[in-house]
Image (cartoon, rainbow, N blue to C red; front, side, top):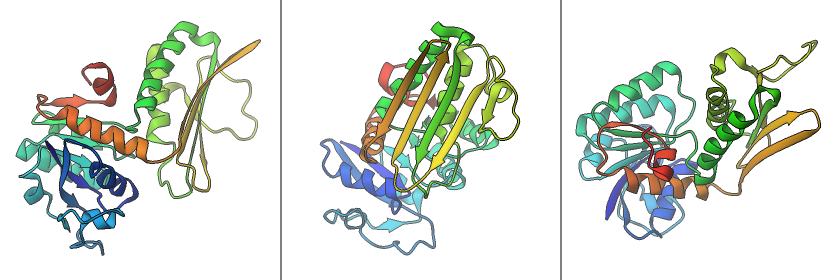
Length: 269
């Protein structure tokens, strides 16, 4: 039995993880965490997630909850995720972080935590998307810079960061496959007299509308043809199920920084 604590328990993703964990064999939610002033504190996490009561009240005390768990799953927000990673490191509990929007400085702090415990960080927990990262890199490597690359992502109107962490990770995969640094070749949207498209540029575009769960397309185009790699998420359940798989996988791993490709392919992060 894998015992998990869910951080961000009252959010959309936290709720789906708790709800689906109740249906999964071999996994149990033993803790549910949210911020200190959240109105859901004290309520049963299972009932809040739309299911039966599980006898786990939502609290703000991760340190106490984590002492009785095998892994922490974090879908809070980036500032909170840093605190949660520090607690995980202090207690030597592995942590799965699906929270997006982290800066470079914040990721350095996650790497510090990874010296003490296993930290799996992924901008997207979908198994299909993580397969797409590898496929996009292989296509970019094979085609070379004769093919222009544009990345388009679409999400619901409530998403707070842009571009999505998934779109940036796709762009990083393509840039690395071509031996480039993304920050030197990325362009975010276009407006006005932009001139001809430079060779090697990677375009990244974010759409926000309605209740779109998540769509990502990587377009490779050259004179005469176009290749499109597309992933569409139909519900948040795909992310929640991926997070649960990651939580099972990370238990017993040595300290280090991992990603979902490690879960799929056994690679080091």
